[in-house]
Image 1: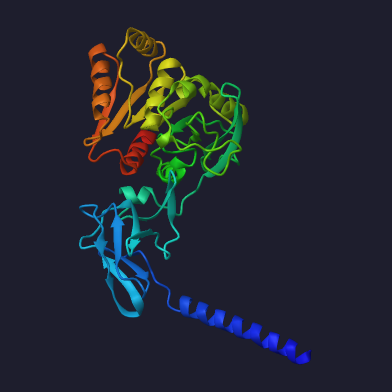
Image 2: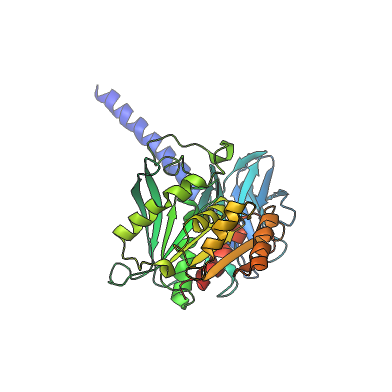
Length: 385
């Protein structure tokens, strides 16, 4: 029996030693990826001596097509961008023998609908786009995930709330930006993909934006929360014919406002409320503000708009733009290559024809987060001033 116990002990030690040796082999020479070089080129590395072909996909590549990585010593594949990159947030992934993989050396990942992707930020100088998306040594706000009851929808729903630096230790009241996501997103999208927290922290620290509360509700009326956080079954909006509807969110939006104004130190009144969103959230912002005149002083539509096509819509628009409560800012932003640009221009031209105040901003590119982060950065500096 003693021999059996000794053998078992030695076997266990051998297994542990082998495991430790394997871990030592794995971790003795960590792979750095991505590495931002002094000239602002970026090097990607991936260790896999058994791989036959490794490719890199990224939104920084000129043609967006995968490029081959080159195998070097110790089975480490690498690729360096031929040109320096500008300050920005970049997305990428690997293709290993044709199969999509994430970079195991990069713990920075975000989720777009159901797809996880690696990302990195870089900035060449303070004030470029990438700088606003990074964390700096400045006062930082707080992010909360809150549940609220929506009697209108008959659901217990989830939202993400940003409170600015100093909120917890002050007695002041703050204006509120209601920030809405697109049809493929949820209440996590603007924080994960939009870098809302970093943008607001940095703008507030520079004195370029007024300290504000940012409320990011789930804008898909048949989903109460992001995947994995709700009792009801999550339904992907990209495959649901109901996903483009804005009416349910219009009808229930007062439930969101009521919860915030009952639970947070909010400066109430139209002049202290803003609503903005991207794509579906832009259409919702347009429709919500139109159907709730006198509620918001600042409206932002990022890559989405609801043109005025019917007599009922004309009447609603005329009421919204009545001088006694017309918004201080009616801001439309869209990319030059965005498929929704036509609707954005229709709404802009309608406002100009009627003499309604409207601001229009056009950037390069299309229907992408790279534009929506810029639009938020600009819009946040225009409101509550």
